[in-house]
Amino acid sequence: MAKDGTRNRPLSPHLQIWRWGPHMFVSILHRVTGDGMAFAGLGVLLWWLGALAGGPASYETFSKVMTTPIGYIVLVGISWAFFTHMMSGLRHFVLDVGGGFELKTNKTWSIVCPILGVLATVAFWAILLLR
Amino acid sequence: MGNGTSIGRVRGLGSAKTGVHHWLMQRFTAIGNLLSVLFLAVSILLLPDLTYASVAEWMARPVPAVMMILLVVTTFWHARIGLQVLVEDYVHDHANKFACIAALNLAACGGIAFGAFCVIRLALGAH
Image (cartoon, rainbow over all chains, first blue to last red; front, side):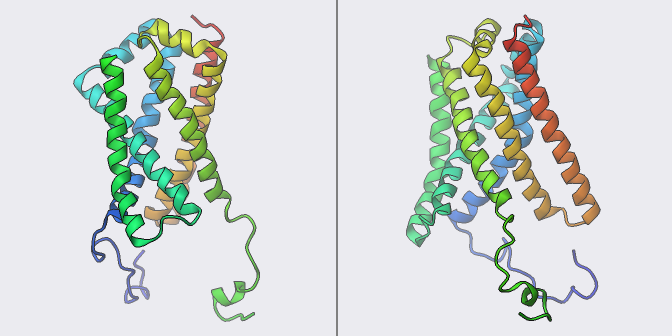
């Protein structure tokens, strides 16, 4: 980006300039979880569908890999990314209609959304493993 | 209307009419993701177990099969739009940006085609 002639232009303040707040954290988290799911989540989804279409033997391979410790970390990670992205996405819907911009409300929901994401992930796995 | 600066040339012309399409599609597909992925999550919890027999029998039924195809379409579309924003934010070189977005479109279309084909193959009784 830095071409001759633009080098001395003032720079827009970025992450290291602003004082950190939860609204920045939830925004970055939204992007990280979304883009993480776009690669890992959709990859595993296609593998799962492909394994099902391939038949019992290929599904067996998928199940074996996904029930190793690394497999569980990947699956828990994807589910956490989904629930976190879902909660901050719902926050975006509220912001889109013009709500939740008051400083205190904005800060509160920026803190609550990631927590709800973790709680939903824990609830999902608790139901799945304890049923 | 001025003609000196780029902002001066466009001021007063109104909206371009097509600018919100990308933004709106991100919201529409977000609603699609919300419904279809929650359907999948609840279905996984309601299945008696996750063996091949149970999952394949479930996915071969009409409603789950259609929901899974819709899930593949809406999630890949949403990811395509989201990753495009990522590319536009961080890949500044024009040629690299074009290459990234071309690859992204191919990958998204390929993912949708593969996912939908797998569900249809299963639902129409491959095994």
